[in-house]
Image (cartoon, rainbow, N blue to C red; front, top):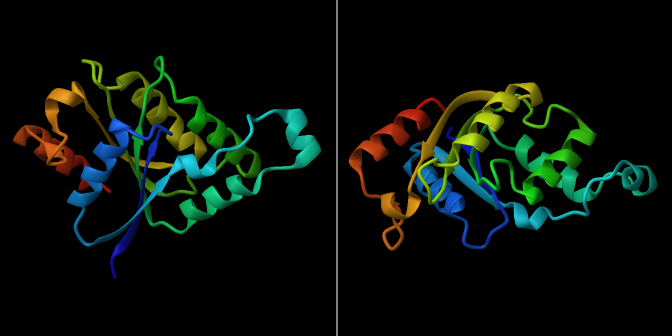
Length: 175
């Protein structure tokens, strides 16, 4: 029986490079059923305590948590906006914590990040790696890809450098 891996980018950009990286990484996973999702499908009003008191927790937050619950493991690509999570993902995450702080539900997870610059979204990756266990994640590994546009063949949808491929496969093996 194959494992079910839920793969998504913590980005709501229609041209997300982190989504491209996650989809490529997911294609490298053998003996796994891959389900991808787009967090754009889970857009909600900005979290505000008063809003929660007035209207409750949006159904989309419950739906997102249900999708997480249905997976055996998580593969997440983290976009970086000014060194932090994109607002769309942070908002979704905040709503989910109002249901239960254990957002990741004990799932094994690998976190990836990339950017067009030399930092490879390393700041947000560090933040997420530190926070994952606090919110119920069984963090198995992280991997950052700097200089995405130089390292990734957009037409072929794959990494150029065999050393990058090996490093990515090594971290995915921990999942």
